[in-house]
Image 1 (cartoon, helix red, strand yellow):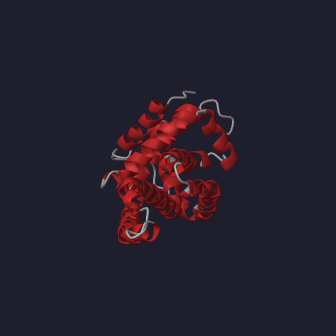
Image 2 (image 1 turned 90 degrees about the vertical axis):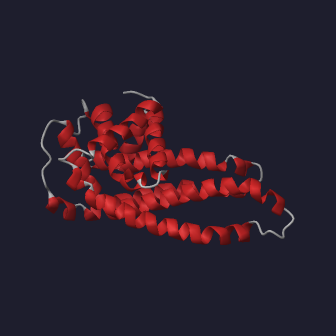
Image 3 (image 1 turned 45 degrees about the horizontal axis):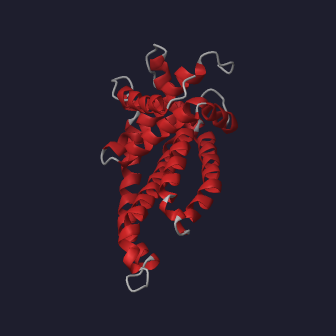
Length: 245
């Protein structure tokens, strides 16, 4: 196994290339549509509420109003990261069954087989997919809430966005690797252990997914590209010699 953040980022790029293949395009249409709707709604909500949030947290008539312009970029970064996670969670909660099917089809391509339509599999995977997403949500909240407290601690709050960024990268690696691993019967604890064994590669992949989600227009294909990239990561780093297959 390779433990290198650059290798992890390359898996995401390879996933982006895979979803452009003719045999896989039809499997990414629904995830892209879900991405577009969810991200558009969250972006509108975030922009409309951000100014009111800043006025409440740092009112212009308060004694510390002079540092508002210094903290503004930090709060913008924090808001973007929160929106990215919320967007990712909602989009994956809705698109989970389709993402599992996409991971299955990508793996067929990697093994030299033609993708095949398995529409019926989507329905039987809905409940397991929802339960998996809810479990990942619990994992996230147990760690995110203490991290969010860092944003209100003086001095420490300067580093808070960067700590949040690292955590977000790690979580996105867990989020997207779940689809190919779950297809092979691996539960969340084992998925966590395997990604932890190549933590730098996982962080590189998750960091790349975070960046991809921040780029306008490109962010609409971030989810299917990350699912495909995570499947390549699974296929090359973990699947060979795996006794569960």
